[in-house]
Length: 222
View 1 (cartoon, rainbow, N blue to C red):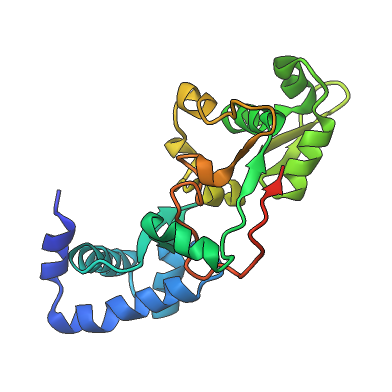
View 2 (cartoon, helix red, strand yellow):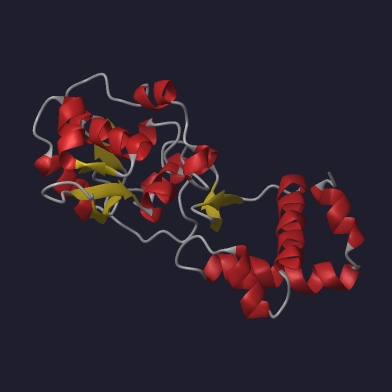
């Protein structure tokens, strides 16, 4: 398999000079992760050429470190700030991590790994009513209603969202950690855990969208 540097060298200097900064600009300006196909359409070029430009950017970032990096997330690409600068970003109030309670983490884990899943199935596994937690996760757009299950009563079925992938820094659901790894993210205390304490979350490793909006430094609890 050809390495990113080899693919980059296959392109002419003019290709790299022209295409890479344009792709970089599209990724920077996008409201969220932007798909390679969408960029190719906007640039009237092929997805392969866009990927070559992305790989050229990754090589450039690796050789000349910046305060941000390029990450594949939620089916697209996004610029995010480097983890080591998280403390400085917090001083500006750019990070406002969610604080997951144990019920929220349990419910989200069940939905993530068993989707599509009904509320009754979630409550069976948790052993308690999960209506309020499920409502909150819906409001935060971390889960969504996928439809209705074809059984008597036709209960609604739930699954995760693109926002869920973004929050956890995952390119797609196939990148989910093992159940054991996910369970280790659950808080040890009853008062929950903030996303900046979780290894797989966007703000856990200190990274965040490079264009994140300014907000207070308070932690928002789920």
